[in-house]
Length: 62
Image (cartoon, rainbow, N blue to C red; front, side, top):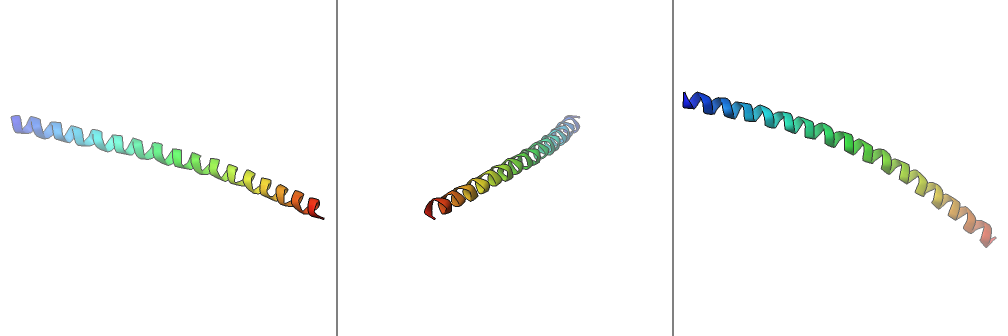
């Protein structure tokens, strides 16, 4: 009886841990996708800024 109760408790805990890991994985994947989009947006802004500064430097030098 005690062994069955212990086995059921471990089984329930294992299912709970699996669900928690799945939810954490989903959360992390969503967060990583969001961070990639932010990085790409910032990268484009920096690229345009560098292009504008380069163009301004060429205009001022000539």
